[in-house]
Image (tube, rainbow, N blue to C red; front, side, top):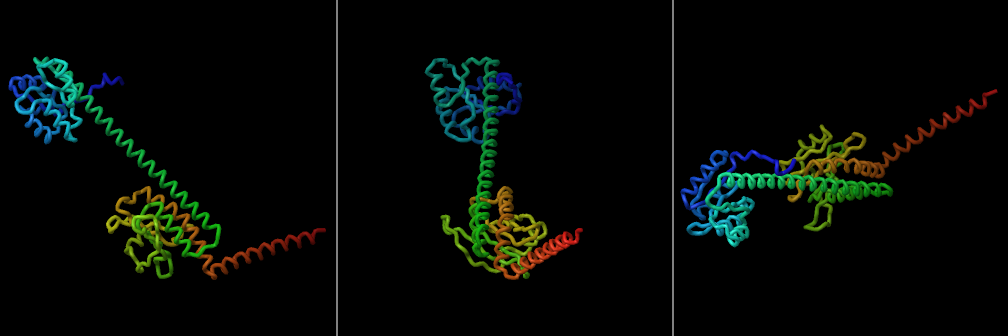
Length: 344
């Protein structure tokens, strides 16, 4: 649609008329009254500044020649206020000389109407500037929402890159033998790098329940991380129960600082969970929890591998299984050979 064909509903728009001559006010009020506008009036510049500050008008009709501060100074002061800077100002003047017109534009006016007023001209100029102001405001709002979406999409992509880098680090870690303590340290370092949290703890499932196995904390404002000893539990048992029941991340916003609990799952079995404390400047959202959950699946592989390597009984169980399979295969091969021998 052509912008010149846009017709917006302007009823209810607030228009402040500033003029020290009552007859001029009457003429303008009568001209605007049928347009459904919400009309405010002021008889001098100081009053206009006060009325504009608390009423936030959509447009101001401002007389140039007034007692006290004139229209130019009034406009200049209006434009100094951030909340009024975008309000269109139309000057009302008996002067149609170039110098006066230029001065009005220099202090922030958008247009002018010369006296005596022509009703059609006044209404047309008011409608034009109200529509422009409304469309400009809508465009600014759309741009702001677009910027928010772009910023959010950029952050999600950055999170995905960090997640993939973390998974790659775990994959490289799996290529060589490492102790469980070394594996947990790598997992925690990656968690801290992905989310920017100030503190993270890995709990592992044991016979007596979840036990804190390792922790990491940002030292000062830098990027140095260190292990720290923890009491048996830093999170309430009820929060652990929520993770056990749903096997889904749980954000505890009521704690100070807020925390998130992310399950470490291996083939649907809960190996443990990762507890992270939010930093004040980065509350965790759904995107963070999704990233942590995805990474926790990769971390589960490394943790399970390290647990098996450090547990001789697990190694023996796996070796026994391999030997059984080998014996079964040998028996099948022997039967095949026997069948060949029995053939005529």
